[in-house]
Image (cartoon, rainbow, N blue to C red; front, side, top):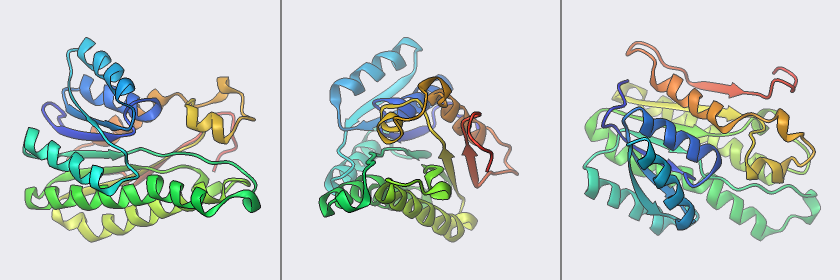
Length: 239
């Protein structure tokens, strides 16, 4: 796929993996919609996009609030008239003993990590289906395979992302829509260091590695697609 002038939404674009993906897409000529809660950090990302002569639009969005997600898509269509790519990356982490987790902890993680993906996929598909084209890439986690202790709610949210992604991939694959999952292992971001403070940061995956994975998927020929990629730390055990 030639990314020049493609319209791409990246959620959680203010830092970490989302920021790296946004910069990578902009560097390839895509017009990137930066969505996240923190306006000041979004402005910093925009400065970096501007420095590489890329194009981006800031839309401050709290992904835990449905009305703000709907506003994100409305504004994108008003500005650009179409949507080619969405990267659902926004997530929060919680690591704690299961019996100490509260129902409000559960609700917060599910709203941000899972419900926002559900809503964003619905909104994206509403735009993409009439176009008969579009790409949805959801950033999950290798926690779906490992299910580490003290990460029950986080694991549940990311397993839900897997279910949504695989279901819509099957439902819409013959209608011009490409859907994929990326499962990162420990990435050198604030989220990962919160969830796994035991891991030496020098051994963590770089956010740019996940951005490169997105570009790899989007760079495949018109006859190929990859449904799912796991990116692990080299220091971690395979599979």
